[in-house]
Image 1 (cartoon, rainbow, N blue to C red):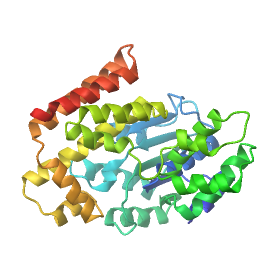
Image 2 (image 1 turned 30 degrees about the vertical axis):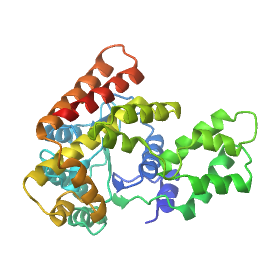
Image 3 (image 1 turned 45 degrees about the vertical axis):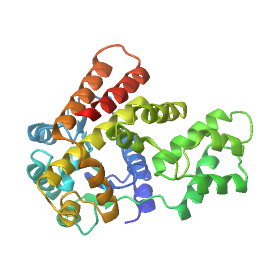
Length: 347
C-alpha cells in the first residue's frame, strides 16, 4: 500500500484495528496519526478511552494493561504507543523482546473494542526480520504494518503547492523552486518552516529575504550539531548555535529531546567501542547504514569517558525535572544546560 492510498482509506473512515508505522520521516507518520485520531472520534485528552504511552519509558506491565483493559463507558478505546524504539532490537531498550512479542500477539487477533496505534522513527529496512514477522501476522488480520515514505526533492514541489493551496495563498513559481532547493529535512520540519514564513509575511507576498531570514537551509548547522559542539567542549559555539535556533523559533523542548537522543546514542556507541567491536558489528547492532557516519561518530565518542557521559545524563535529567516541576524560563534553562554539558569536557 502507498502512503496516498492509506490517507485516502482513513479519510473515508475505513479504520483498521491496529497500525504499526515506522520510517525516517516523522512528518508523514504524524499526518497519519492525526488523521486516525480525528476519525476515531476519541479525543487524545480523553483520559479513560485514549491511552498514550511513551515506548521508550513504558514498562512491559504498562503496555499489557493498556491493551487488555476494556473501554470505559464507550464502544472503543485507542492505545497510542509513540517512540516504540524497542522494535529496532536495540539492546539498550529494556524488555524489548517481550514488548515485541506482546504487540505481535495483539496483531494476531486485535479485538474490536481497541484500536492500537504504534509508531517510531527509524531507518529500518522492510527486510528486517522483526518487520517481516509483524507484516506476516498483520496480513492475516485487520491490521497494517507500513513504512512511511521519505520526503525527496522531486516530491517537495507537490507538497508545497498543496500547502499554499490549502492556505488560500498564491506563491510564484520561482519562490517555490527557491524553497525546494534550499530546504533539507523531513515533511514535519518543512511544514514548521512554512508556518513560520507564512506568519512572518502575513498580509503580503512571500519574498526571498523571508526565506533567507527564517528557513534553516540545506547544509547549514542545525540542532543535531549542538551536541557535537557540546561533546567537543565548544561552549561558546554551542550557545551561539542555540541562540540562532531559538531566533528561528526552534522550541527549547525540541532541543532537550535531541540532547537526550544524542546522549543515549553516545552511550550505546561507547560501551561497544570499549568492548573493541569493529565498525561492521557496530553497524549491525545499532542499525546504522553508512560506514563513514559510524566512523565519524566513533572518532568523536571514543575520547569521552563513561564518567563524563553519566554526568551529562544527570545534568539532562535534572534540567528536564526543573522544566516540568517548577516555573522556569525554558530558553534560559536549556542555555544553562548547554553550558553545563560543555563544561564536563575536562572529565
